[in-house]
Image 1 (cartoon, helix red, strand yellow):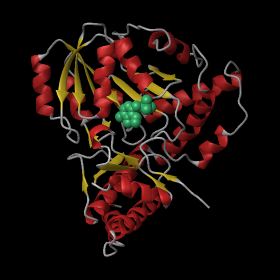
Image 2 (image 1 turned 120 degrees about the vertical axis):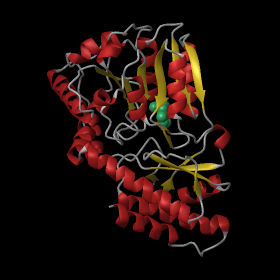
Image 3 (image 1 turned 120 degrees about the horizontal axis):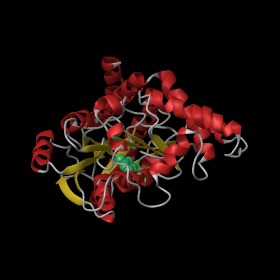
Amino acid sequence: MKKERLFTPGPVQIPERVLKVLGEPIIHHRTPEFKEIFAYTRELFKRLVDSPSDNFVYFASSGTGAMEAAVANFFKPGEKVIVINAGKFGERWVQIANTYGLEIVELKYEWGKSVDIDQLKDSLDRNPDAKGVLFQISETSTGAYHDYKAIGELCKNRDTLVVADAITTLGVYNIKPQQEGIDILIGGSQKALMLPPGLSILWFSERAEKRLNPKGYYFDVKKEVKKQKDATTAYTPAVSLIIGLRESLEILLEEGMENVEKRHRIMSEATRKAVEELGFKVLPEKPAISVTAILSEFAEKLRKEMLTLGVRTAGGQDHLKGKLFRISHMGYLDMLDHFSAIGALELAMVKVLGKTDHLGKGIRAFQKAIVING
Ligand SMILES: Cc1ncc(COP(=O)(O)O)c(C=O)c1O
């Protein structure tokens, strides 16, 4: 028997309840039945982000599609934006902003670092004409956290839109964009929303709405939001994923977003304690609670052995390839699931490092952290 457990930062493990509805016969999207489901998922999403606003759209795309839509719809060519670039996905903001002819002020950090809020304040003060700050809440390539609440606070009284890529944080942190000064919030289905890939979400504030100026055809937020407020879509939606979203949002809301965040915090902190006890170092100084990025010169060998045991982790990207492995906490994972990841790592270390004295130490540190934090 081969059982694979996904500890990758997307795609993630999917709850049985979601899988069950994904397997149901497809229904047509122009029917009262689908319209009702669509409207209901929108109500659930408003509860997830604790905002009554109807200013959000689903796109049949991966998360990057919604990132592109944010740039294409809310900024004009030549406008200045500040981009926090501390990894692969910060780089993606730079590439998209370049594609749309924006002027970029780059706050570039070594991979693993988080934004320095004083530096950002300084940059905002020196660039009062900056129309947006583009960043990731969790820079998945390094596991670093950028303090979205502090960024929201900084931009509150400025004419600068706060554009948060929450692709690996929506469904992890209890994010309340309206209260926390976020103007554009972007999510993707295959992460903490516990769905297969193929659906993205873009939420926007009232002040962002005033700046709506769509370019392009498919990713036209103005056209799409008008349709979606009426529980339909301009084009064929990702029908099965929307039906799956109904379940996954219900699951998250049943647990309650405060508890969801607490669960991720405990799982990630306990994982950190476990790998540190096993002699590893985590990369980021301020880790996000969605994914733990662990440095090791044996990263690829360890990952291969862990996979043989049935635990799939992610490797490092770009210059961190071969030097990093990442254990995700997103998706249908609880505390006990993490024993399989830590246990597999300990067993992989036996094979790769040829020693056994560490056995049980990671598991014990994990358990201790749960007892202390739980
Ligand atoms: C923070 C972040 N932003 C953007 C993306 C890109 O999302 P997608 O692969 O769904 O286009 C990812 C994917 O891992 C991500 O983690």
